[in-house]
Amino acid sequence: QPKNIFFGHLISIMIGVLFNETIGLSFYSAGISVGLAVILMVYFKVMHPPAASNPLVALFMDLSYDFILFPIIVGTIVIILMAILINKIILKKVQ
Image (cartoon, rainbow, N blue to C red):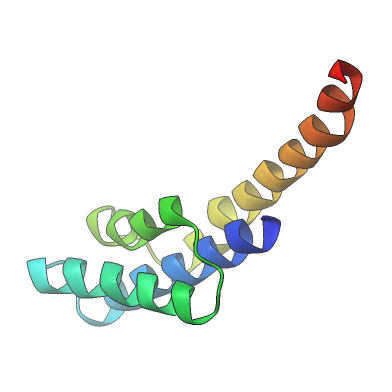
């Protein structure tokens, strides 16, 4: 679902950047940030398993808040638009 893709990535990258800015990289921050991201995605019913890796990306690459807007938000919008395009146009022709 588009909602799951968008908000799953948004929640998880926000957790990752928040942990990177406050705690920094450690085994504990990596594990807790991924666990917290999964818990929040389940709580808000926007589970998107690939998004669970975003906190690790934010921690290992030492990313800041500008990474949330681009490429995460822009990238998820492009993914959603491509999925709509494929489902509406290409798959409709096959049937």
